[in-house]
Image (tube, rainbow over all chains, first blue to last red):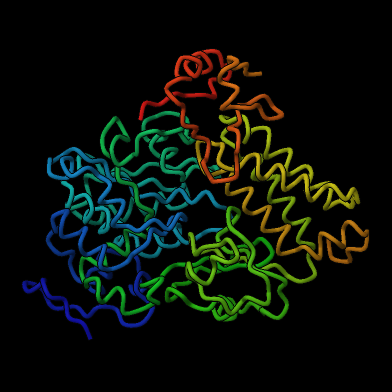
Amino acid sequence: MTRVADTRLFPAVQAPVGTARLTAAPAADYATHQSTFGPLPAHADSAALLAALRESGLEGRGGAGFPAWRKLAAVPARERARRRRVVVIGNAAEGEPLSQKDATLLLRSPHLVIDGLLTVAGALGAHSVYLYAQASVLESATRALAERADASAIELREAADTFISGEASAVVNALAGRAPIPQDRTIRLTASGLGGRPTLLHNVETLAHIALIARFGSAWFRSVGTKGDPGTRLVTVGSDGHPSTVLEVAGGSRIGDVLRFTGVDTGSLSAVLVGGYHGAWLPAYALEARLDRADLAGFGANPGAGILMGLGERRCPITVAAAVATYLAGETAGQCGPCVNGLPAMAAVLGRLARGDRDPSLPGEVRRLAAIVTGRGSCNHPDGTARFVLSTLTVFADDVSAHLDGHCRKDH
Amino acid sequence: MASAPRSCLSLLARDEWGYPLAYGYGSGGAGSNVPVPDTLLAAATDAVSLCPRQALTLVDR
């Protein structure tokens, strides 16, 4: 059992054992937080924090899965050395409709997120610190910030309610008072972001893990999970389009186990959407795959922001996918021609296939449009949408054939 | 529709909506960035200023 090494002035607190880490505190208030996790240690400098994050293997929990230490390392060394230069942002925009884990985290363990923000801000001697969160959690976050004396510098801002609101440059635009849409960037945010300042943006779950790594160390962090996906992660599990449960699971858990734990009958599923609307389908035969990069790579998926959405075997996947593609087309920022024009065109062709149009050229036309939009936006929206649509055609090839033959018997 | 000067057509095509599309697109994951050889710099500069949707940017690397 691990003891906290550097809190000698305070009663020692045991590091959480098992997979309840971010969810270890039985209540959201500051006193419970402190008695559960102990006080936040004195801030490490940026080199020490960078080393700890590197050893931990913590990957960002916002979707892209970028190693947390790399983002910190991307802030130019001269900026890290100077004080009051860097902007730190905790991102809980969570525009993805299938995800609820960031909101759940902020309702349940807001002080871990605040600790993470203070840890990163302290290491960098930040100029300013923001927490960007959706309306539903503002009250809880406001209460948490008011409970402690060390968080007065954190500015809470309401996130835009759009799918792409959480994209890093869209967050920076929103905080700067501009439209909350992505920016075509030639310079990294970590070099020049909000107000031209180096800007470090982390997902709030990433920050909560950083708060625990600062207390209990990187070896403790790695003591749960797999080598490829160390630590725990929050997942939102649901079925047929309705997110239902947020769980904290060990990294690299078997997807079937996670689903069954929440009461999903995995025998009744045709596939699971991993990673949300920008993710990919995992077919039923592969449900024992682990929720880590290596196991999911073959399906074009990654653990991402931890979304697992089961699809019942009675539901027509082409119809479901066409509805998702239509939604995503409507969520374009409206900036880039290929996205503005290509996503609605792609969704429309998929919709024709879903509704029973038996023109055999339709799947090929979907693929052609997916190829033509990929890589041609200021952000990842066209790419993610194309990935989802292509995964649908691949994993549900039999359903595509059934539609072209006119005998899909599933529920539409 | 974006009308690029003739010499820049060796780098860019147009998609069905008139937006610039890099030749060889999708084959190597080159994204939307097209290296411009020095000999085409003037033509590329013209293309950027003529594109009515401002869909092109020239970046010095």
